[in-house]
Image 1 (tube, rainbow, N blue to C red):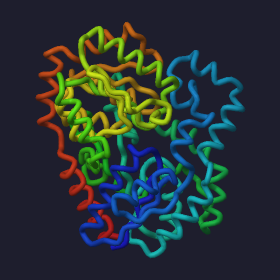
Image 2: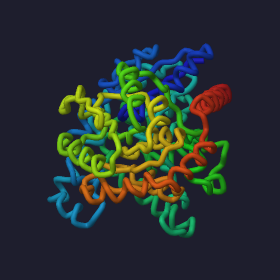
Image 3: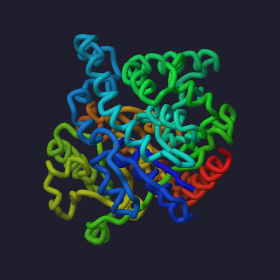
Length: 425
């Protein structure tokens, strides 16, 4: 079969779909991938053909639309007030949401011609929805948290009708940002003007939406969603080694298990100050710190190594996390799952988007706590680390790890489901 995987976002969005694409390729299928230009090299390095698809996702994170506070990180009324002129904010949001739209549509239309299936995520799902509608081929999506209407993520139980209406209103508002670009895309594809929001059209077509996270996080979802349409399969990852893994292994073995700190692709305003904050807190508690610079590597001295602190550019989560006392990170879906699979407690210091949702689940499961990174001080970090490093938290994390799905099982399940979708077209 011919399968196209078109996914946009950071490495945390792209890597799970790359793992899935590799499994489809291993099964003998012809797989093409389209990813942000900054991740083309990464995808090619694992053995997949890749083309550039949309804006540079790391530049998007660092662009002016995403500077705090903004629509992604605003969490309080004062945050929203600091956004300034609502019309300016609207123009910025529309420009950010539709940048590169026509080029992405052309790229995907070319790749998908003659394909049996297109796989995408929630970012730019509207582009893939319209292209597959025009070509008459199935669309499948990979979701990293429960993005469709449900009551499981609500802080309080609400009637299904109320929740559904709230989600529909949010989807409609988002459509208004996209509507000029989407209308032009549909015209160029020869499709009639849309009369309903894109999510309703995608769902209405019966698209399969793989839920790439573990059921343990949202145990009541199975009661709300069809397992055929929205199967919860567990997280997917490549578990790739990194160039510094051996060095990291040696440093870990030289002393007591450290606490891991890392923020993935998330921009950290002042990485040097954050490192100082971490170092002081860990010195007070008498624990070692392994700090992963991630996207801040260019701003950090990643060769810094002492008995107490080591800073590196990247690590293999699957190898390193089980050897740590705890993991502290931004709360990305993949990193959260990797930490809990390793059986170690978690402190989520969230930056943006759905990350506080994962922090809330960590707290609910009793395996850690969470806080906004920008609200973290030396005092709060000490308090949070003491809670996370407590014996009872560690015991619960060890027990929870037994309930997590191995990534290889998740990838195999996802590939089999997609084969069924493509065969049933």
